[in-house]
Image (cartoon, rainbow, N blue to C red):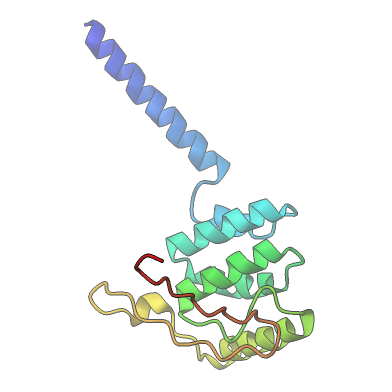
Amino acid sequence: MHRQGQTARAGVLGLAVGLSCWAAGCGGAAPRRELASGNPLDRARGIVKVSERGDLAAVHKLVDLLEDPDAAVRMYAILALRHLCGQDYGFHYYDCAADRAQAILRWRDALRNGELTPRHAATSEGAEAAAPEPPPCSSTQPAAEPASRVESGGP
């Protein structure tokens, strides 16, 4: 009898946790609400969640977040867009505002013209499609340093 009581209590506790999560907004729309938060950490967390869920309904809001004043939010937004759409339209979160604005215009034009194909729809039999190469950066991307070779052998 004692074991049945523990099992029943565990079931009730599980139900209570599930209901509280549902009431707190752990469902599909909650991460999209986080995208509009006044806290950059909440916005970044929401971006990660919509990206992980493959939430294509959030693409327009993610493009809006490319204009966020917080560089980390912009970084997470472009990473999520690359994940969802397989494209970045030359956007670099660290570029100057003018270069970012040009890339955001390319994103908005692509959305308006229906040029975006969600990456999840472009995959075949669960294999990830390769993301297209982004166009070369205009001016502010740091140049890669040449790799130094380590010679084997003694002095």
